[in-house]
Amino acid sequence: MYRKLIYVMLTACLASLTLLAPVAAQDTELCDVIQTEPTATTDASPAETLMNTGLQMTARNDFDTAITLFSQALDLDPELSDAYLYRGCSYANNNEADSAIADLQTYSALTENPDLMTDVEAYIASIMSGPLPCVAGTSYVDQTEARNTVNGFIEQGATAEDINDRGLAFICLGDYEAAIRDFSRALDLDKNDSRYYANRGYVYDLQGRTEEAILEYEQAISIDPQNAIAWNNLGFAQVLLEDYDEALDAYNESLKIEAGDDVTLVNRGDLYALLGRYEDAEVDYNEAIAVNPIGINYNARGLFYLDVGFYQDAINDFITSAELDPENAIYFNNIGYGYYLLGDYENAVTYLDQSLALDSSYPIARRNRGLAYWRMGEFALCIADYTVRLSVDPTDDISANNRGLCHEDLGQYDLAIEDFTRAIENNDVQIVELHNRSRVLRFVERYDEALTDLDLAIDLDPSDPLSFNYRGIVYDFMGDMPNALSDYSQSIALDPQYAIVYYNRAYVNQQLGNVSAAIDDLETFLDLDPNTIYREDAEALLTELGAGGS
Image (cartoon, rainbow, N blue to C red):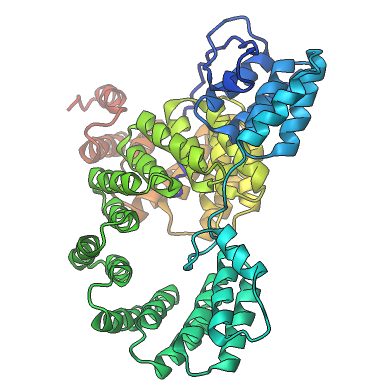
């Protein structure tokens, strides 16, 4: 849900990977085998290792990651028959029938088992999914119901209300232009129904046409000042334009008409939180839950608690949301992210697995799980998650950057640089990615290129103390102590509480013979960060400089 991009100081970790034994295909239910964790071994080939890592993912119902790993295994060994079975079963669980059939046919051919195809077809038919949910919220339950309305529509004699209803069906199906045409046709028949303006405004909002949406909501209100939905939607659109005072007025008007409306209470709570009025925000969330204790309202309060740092309270609300709506992948993602922020990465992965089992295409959950794997030192699984994301969206700069972090911690510096470069090319801001690439360039002693990256980062934001500290580190490694000292000092000037820079500058001052300045820096460092992992080193240097430990 949130972007997490970390600068790792000075060191990179190496992964410790467990090799797993292949699991033979079973003669029972065709694809039961993919729900079985493989057993460990020390003699698996690289292709078998990838295949069995994929089986770890299928056992967690994470079929997208599994497919990526099985594909990598088959790139290494195209004759690895079990990988076709496992990938085919994974495709089947993702409702990708054509790909499943192709893989299972290959498996059948490689194992000389032509009778397998009857089981293949029966299995695929048995796991096809039900109706798709609506693309956007309307009064329709799912796309099947909406499509039935569209397909069964009779033009002759259709009323404005009939056409409006079909417009709502088109919203469910994600056909926004058709929805706009229907709401416009409804208005041609009845210009005095404020709902049709409000509905057309809602579609404009979905399309990002916020100014046009506001005009529609205002027209709806001019016709019917008691249209509480139009007031609420007007407030929401004004928030998007950062017209916060007008938005608050609109929400208040909506609540005057429909006191206790939970949707508007949540929206106003979100606005209060944005404005830093946290007590008012919590009151609105609590009232919304009291009025209508549904998952989305607990989730809204949970997000508020997450933003203000009450992580366990947030998790509790997300868990309640998931209990009330156990098919909603967002709630399980949010639980997982809450545990991630608490540093409980195993619980984070458990809930993110559940989120992806409900919606394997949910990008935020996959990014978040990649982060949790990274924190756990499961770098191969981290890379697999981000590889899945990038196969879907090659321009996803967050996934490219974070995969680079995982490659870096495996010591795969060339791949890390490629990923950070990809992230930079797909991100207009670039500063964090430039920091990350410069660090790896420093690791491989490409100092001039590292300096170029940090020069650009400083040009983008001259007030960022991180960039000056990182450039100081590069100069330090190059032996250019005067420039290192200058950059560390500039970093401290921008942020006097940035503890690690005093530690870095102390070493430069020592090299330059500035003993008293080095002592001052080390003492300041220990005052600012008394629990630092570098405390022993700092105290040793203080002793060497004649100041003693503290």
